[in-house]
Length: 122
Image (tube, one colour):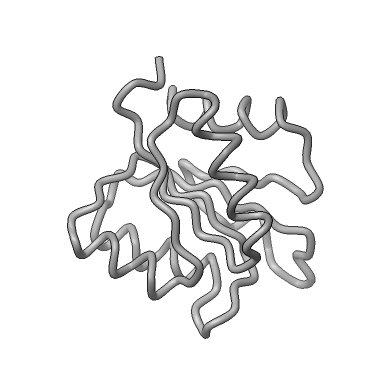
């Protein structure tokens, strides 16, 4: 089910990043962590091959989650994306594209795992 499935989690909040890693690891997923968009791109360029990118939409460090997803898909075109955010402001969530989903913070464990499973089974 989840064996061999790798997820790249990008979150600038240490607590949330750790929580997401523990949540996804407990479900059997392999996890790679990054605190910024640029760190995530470096991991992808370094050979990390996730099937799913889980990223906050609003990231510190200059590259937001949407730009990160677009750049990541130039490296891994088949990469699926789960955007997670407590604030979306004026972001057009309807225009995020195929193989994407959105999860509002705060979220329940089951809601997160259900969305992850749904994206990975497409």
